[in-house]
Amino acid sequence: MARKLSIKPWRNKTYVLIAVALLILAVEPTQFIRKITDANKEAQAQLKELNKFATTTSWHKSYFDGAPKDYILIIGESARKDYFHSYGYPVSNTPFLDRNYSVMVDGMKAGGTYTIGSLTNMLTLPDKIKWQPKYDRTLIDLAKSAGIRTYWISSQGMVGKWDTPVSAIGKKADVVVFLNKGDYSTKNISDYALLKPFRRALKNPTTQSRLIVLHTIGSHPDACNRTIDFKNSYRVKDKNYEYLACYVSSIKKTDDFIGRVYEILRREEKRTGRPFSIIYFSDHGQVHRVDNGKILLNNNVTSKFHYDIPLIKIDSDSKGSVILSSEKSGLNFTEGLANWMGIRNSDIPSYDLFDGKSDPQDFGLKAKIESIKTPMDRAIDLSPYID
Ligand SMILES: [Zn+2]
Image 1 (tube, rainbow, N blue to C red):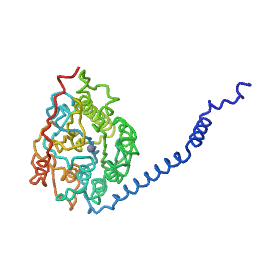
Image 2: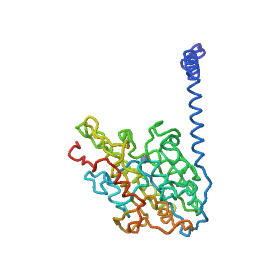
Image 3: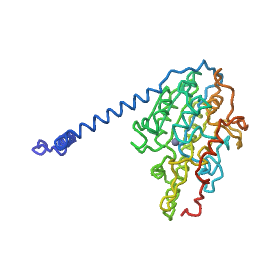
Image 4: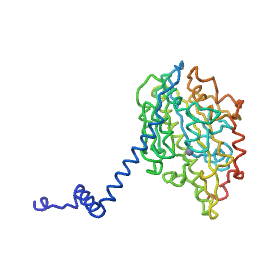
């Protein structure tokens, strides 16, 4: 009895927390309060920045005549096309995609060389001369105007220098899930964590078509942080190739992630009879950098291969697979996605990402690539170094 009554403050979390807080306040009250105030100010500034892009839509009315279907758009991160086995990389790091693609486009070009620069052009109907996004013409608003229910599920940061304008596009969706509400470095969220809210989204009974965007963290630096929970990573003995092994593994993890998304959709299809289509693409590539003999990949400068991104489609009713060599500009991506979803709108010309024809115009892309002074840095074969 006496035991039960005795006060053991260290056993009580609240007591301990209060005690720690008081201790901090006693030690450095001004610094403690200043930190909170700074964080609040920063959050408010970021929210203001985010709202700046929240313009109203200027799309004219859209039409959608197709049967209800689930469209899954998986956005990859920093994944160079030439590091995918599906596109010829010697290490077999894309076992799922190799077997399951319906259409693979060889020649897709990013809308820019970094996340914001690329995705804001690819997910809005941009000014193609200036390579500038138009936030009143987003993919999300377009899908909504056609009566498609929209979801944006992200493991990327919600705010910050590298994320805010893309998040502003995502925030227009009917259902928005940001697993990381800070900037990208606040939390290390695995792309596998996207699967739970994805499953939840699919469980909602609906007769509408759905566009579910999964914005992955993919191969974002540090690639070794991306693969912490991935069991099938490549191991190398040579320390100089360790980072490269992480990068090649991060693409293998993405392949596995796409495979899991596919399995979930197949199960749902059995339950509901709803067909689906998946598109995977990456926002841009990366450049090699050698630091003290170690091969790194990052985005500090631009590679001539920065614009070369994978574009892969998987249809639930696919009858086979085809590889199309055609140069497609990221600046036409929203038109292409509209066509994929069967949306008709007078603001956009009919345009097919998967017709195998090169775009007649590259909007100055060749000149942009020519102006890149970094030497050619082709993909480095990891296979001789794998344990
Ligand atoms: Zn990016």
